[in-house]
Amino acid sequence: MPAPPLHKSFGQYETLAKAYCPESFRLVQTLLPGNFYTVAVSLMHPLSRGYSHITSSDPNAKPAVNPNYLVHPLDLEIFARHVRFIGTIVRTEPLKSLFKPGGLVNRAAPKDLQDLDAIKEYIKDTGLSSWHPTSTCAMLPREAGGVVDHNLVVHQTKNLRVIDASVMPITPRGNPQSSVYAIAERAADFIKMDYAIDPRRQLLHYNFISEVEDGSYDQDFF
Image (cartoon, rainbow, N blue to C red; front, side, top):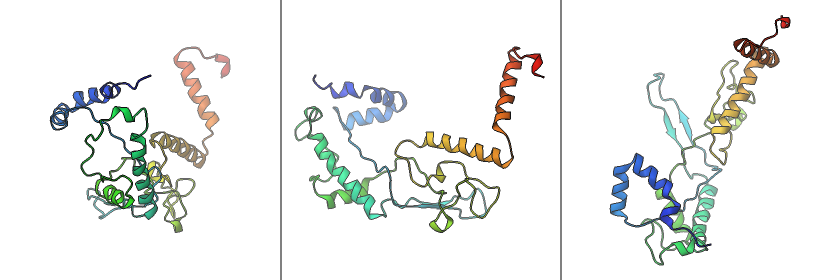
């Protein structure tokens, strides 16, 4: 089965661009007429560690944030080898037949995608965030740089918890949203235990309210 035309394969993105960014879409069409394809790689488990700290007691003051991208040498090494593999991907069918021989490529990209040193410089110049920041209040021992314990309580406090993506010690491979939901559910269990709230009684209460609302409760229940 022949590969579909490129413009049809990515029609959904074209539709969204036209609807939400019409001026930008027209500008791109003017500067880059024709069909283009982007192959991107993402570092799923970066070992580099940044930081975010308050800078003032004023709650309106901006914090100091430094993601420290690629400071761990293994991050850059893995990233460069993934970018190098892009050359293999685009030279492999059925994708290969979709590209024009000698067609345009990113102007900043190295001409030789086998040159790891050139690729590393390219990554440092053009790499972007995947916009899923996590782990700034990691669940780790305090001596290892952690902020919360296994119950999500901030170290050296008794009643202060952090319940969001920042407690993840390592960034998950996928979008962290579902993991944040799971963390929040677990935190709710911790809070119930702290206040000796029996989840079975809570469930019974919710079920009873539901039954009363629809008029189906049994008076003998009382």
